[in-house]
Every structure is written in structure tokens, then in C-alpha cells.
Length: 434
Ligand code: HEM
Image (cartoon, rainbow, N blue to C red; front, side, top):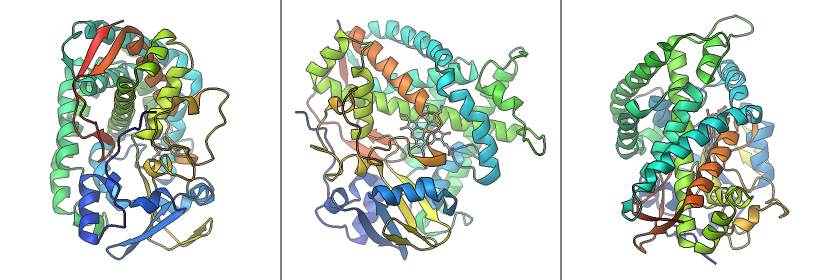
């Protein structure tokens, strides 16, 4: 049985300084052993109560029964606003409802056959290009980031990302390295008061949004069509049922930024982690290669999402007092639901750290409710979940069907929780023809 590597877990709750350093450098190392065993963990961070919920009824209450009592946390807003603007990920209230109603149908299961055509065509080109890399070291993290970005651009916005891809990836890497780690002030101050970090984030936001605007400019130059041909046309046609107003140019731009960002980075790391697991477990890799259209591809993707959930933490701030399951929640408390913890919790999973895609094969009983939340739950569940699962399964099966994938070195690849669950280094892979 292959044990999927994870960073060391502190035996005891960390004292303040170490806790803060862990949150800043690798949030996955901020929770002690007890988090993987207990139903609830309380800690106080700079005067604020933080609750980590591992209890299904409590999670159900916060995400599904009473989501109106919760909003995104101040730190999440500070860090995501410069890249996602006022788009669907961060909007609230009526604005969110309109955005969600417009975007969800364009990513619904019904639309998958059309999206699959884009995914397959783009993937097939990428696989042909990978043939040139056989034998030499290959950075499959970068390859997956470029491929998922290309798929997002073409399928949602009918745009080839070639011209922008490099600049976009450079900016996102710079953001993750330099602006996405919360400082103490970022955590303490309300979002209306700018911190030092916010000034740099603001400068980044101007450059980022200018890039998105140039992409939109190119898209707008494409000939008009009577029927909407992609998500961009749907967004442009959307009208508020009460006021009849459409999205303003800035709102449209923020939506495009949100969907390109949320729509590719998470899927890229999902594929990357699935490939690292398969590189270490040749039997499973060979079984997938022998039957790439069978159910194993989806099961490997689901298991990779369990062991390395790209969205490792869902955070909310309580607007008013509440009772979730057995837990009292106070106004202003920070509520954390951590897929990273739930997915490796000893109360829910047998051999929680072991890679075992059979957990997700058809006929196997589903995991206990609310123990597996790679896409969240409730009204704010990931709007792109179907798209992401379809894409990741198709790309993984295509790649493994064509190449055998190995590592150049035995050095373990460890997850780091920043905005998404990234590897601590981009390992060199070696591809061989099957
Ligand atoms: C494996 C890939 C993905 C993972 C793990 C993932 C995970 C998540 C999670 C956990 C949330 C809920 C966050 C919360 O409740 O605070 C979310 C929301 C969201 N995701 Fe994804 N996502 C993925 C792919 C995608 C794709 C492909 C798209 C777009 C095409 C997308 C767009 C969004 C948007 C717009 C939201 C905000 C929805 C709302 O608040 O109404 N995601 N995602």
C-alpha cells in the first residue's frame, strides 16, 4: 500500500508564533494530531475564536442549512480580491445570485458533451507535443498548468491562450510567491483597512486586470453571433430579471478573471497530484493504461482530490451567533471546514493516508456524508465541479494511455497549502512511450 506523503503533523497545538509561521508558510502544518481525530477543534488567534469543524451535522448546518449567516473571511477577501475582483467567487447577496444563475447553466452536466469536444481536441494536441519530450526530464506541473489554461480559454471563451498563457502563468506564480501569504496584519485588521501587503496587491491587481482586459478586447473583436457560442456570450447576454441591467464592462472583466483563474489552477494541481501518485504506483498506472475509458481514471482523480484537495480549506466568518450541530458559534467567529483534514480524518477513513482508488470505484459504498468535500457543499458549491472532474479524468486517461510516467528521483513531493495545494518542488518526470 502506498502512503501518500504529507508534511509533519505537530503532536500538540502550536504556540502562537509557530502557529502564525505555519499559517504563513504552509497552512497544512498548522493543525495538530488532534485535528485528524476530534470532531471539533477550537483555538484563539489574536482574540478571535477559530473553529475547525469535522462534524457532519455542524458542516451541513454552516454550508447548507444556514449559509446566509456566513461570509468569506477577511483574509480570503484580501488575498483573492486582486485576482478574482467582484466575480462569482467573491460576490455576495443579490449580485452573487444573478451571477450564479447566469454562469451555472453554462457549466451544467447538460453542456458537458460540447465542453468535452474542446477538452479532447486540446488534450490531443498537447499529447502530440509531449511526444517530443520522451526520454528527457519533463516538468508535468507546468505542462498541466499550460494545458488546463488552454482548455479553460478555448472552452469558456473560444480563445487560444497561446499569446497570453506565459504572461498569465508568470503573474500567478509571482502572486502565489509574494502576495498570497497572509501577514499578521492581514489576519487581524478588517478588510476595509488596507495593510502593507494590500498596497502591493493593488499594484498587482492593476497589471492583472489590464491583461484580462486585453484578452477580452481580442474576444470582443471576434464576429458577433446570433446564438451564444460560449460562456462569454452568455455572460454578455445576462440581464437582471428585475432591473433588466446587464454586467458592466468591469463586472464582465472580473467574471472572466475569476473563471479563468478558478477554472484552471485547481484542475492543474489535481492532475499533477494524480500523476505523482501514479508515478509511484505502477500497477495502478498500468491498469489505467490497459483500460483508459474504464472507471479507474475517475476513481484515481477522486482519490487524488481526497489526498491532495486543491481547495484545502473553506473559511467563513459568522455574521451572527449560531448553533451548528453541538457547537456554539459567536458573531465574528472564524469557521473552518478543511477538506485537507476531513479527507485524512481517522474517524471517516480506513488507512486515511494510503492511496487506494478502489474507494471510489462503482459498487464501493460512498464515503460518510460530509467527509469528502473537494468542491465544498451547499449553494456555494463549486460551479465548475462537473467540468473539472470531466476534464481531469479525460486528460489523465489520455496521458496514461499514451505514456508511462516515472519520476527521475525518489525525493518525496510534499504538499504546501498556500491559495491552493501546491507541491514543495516541481519534480522532474520521465515519460516513455507505451
Ligand atoms: C479540481 C478542480 C476544482 C476544485 C477542487 C474546486 C474547488 C472549489 C471549492 C471548494 C469551492 C467552494 C469554495 C467555498 O465554498 O468557499 C469552489 C467554488 C468555485 N469554483 Fe471551483 N474548483 C475546481 C474547479 C473549478 C472550475 C473548473 C471552475 C470554472 C470553470 C471553478 C469555478 C469556481 C467558482 C466560480 C466558484 C465560486 C462559486 C460560488 O461562490 O458560487 N472551479 N471551487
